[in-house]
Image (cartoon, rainbow, N blue to C red):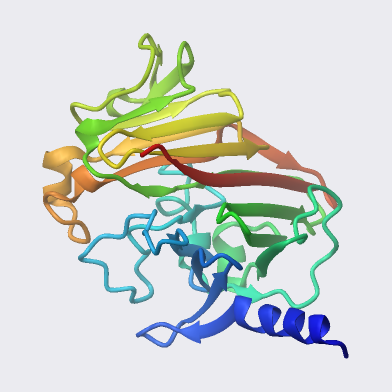
Length: 307
C-alpha cells in the first residue's frame, strides 16, 4: 500500500469511533478532517452533540439531563417517530427516541446526493420489537445515515421501508435543539405568510403575519408546507443556522418559556433562554407507505459566522 493509501486508512480509522457514554450506552463519534465533530447515541439514534472545528457546541442539552434510559434525552436531535406529540394513540413523540438502534453494517446503497463522498458517516438501523408491534402493529426498517462534511455540516438521511403486508402511515420530526445566546436575540426567517397550527390554541390554524419570527413568550407551532430552507439568526453570537430539508414539508418551532420550563423536571428554570427547537417534520399530512415502499427524508444543518 502506498503512503497516500495508508494516510487515507488512518483518517478513516480516526474519523469514526464507537465509544460508550457514562451509562454504558454505545455512541458513535464522527470527526471531519478539519476538526468538526458529531456524537450520535445508539439510544434513540439521537445526535447529542455537533461541534464546529473551533470546538463550539451548536446543539443544546439540558444541564439536568442524566442520559439514563428509559428516559428520552432533553436536547440534541431526538427523532419523533412514528408519531409527533400526542397526535395519536402512542406515547408522546412515539417510541423511536427510546429504543436502542444498531449500527447498520451493510446498508442498501444510497442512490443520490453522493452521501458518502468526502464525508464521515455512520449508518444506524431500527426495527420494531415484539413489544413495539403490540402497540403499533406495523413492520418497518428505519435506516438513518448521519454525515459530517469536511466543512462541518451535519446531514441526516432517513429511509423508512414498509416490510409489512399492509399499508401504514406515520408522522416524523427531527426535534432539533439549537444552542443560542439568548432567545430574545434570535429570529427565524423562511416562515413568512405560512399557515401554522398553534398547539397552545388547540391546534387552531393561523397565518404567519410577520416578516420574521421573534420570541417574547412560549411558542409551540407547526408551520405547514414550508420552503426547503429555513434560517435561524442569532444576533449576539453573530451566527446563522441554515436548515435545508427534503421530504419534510412542515416545520415545528418550540420554546417552552419561563412557566413551562419550571414544570419540566429535566429542564432548568432559565434554560429556555439558551435553546430553540426548529424541526424538519412531516406532521399535518402523514406519510403513507404501501407494502415494500420506502420513504426518504433529508435534513442538512449548517452554520455561518458573520463576525
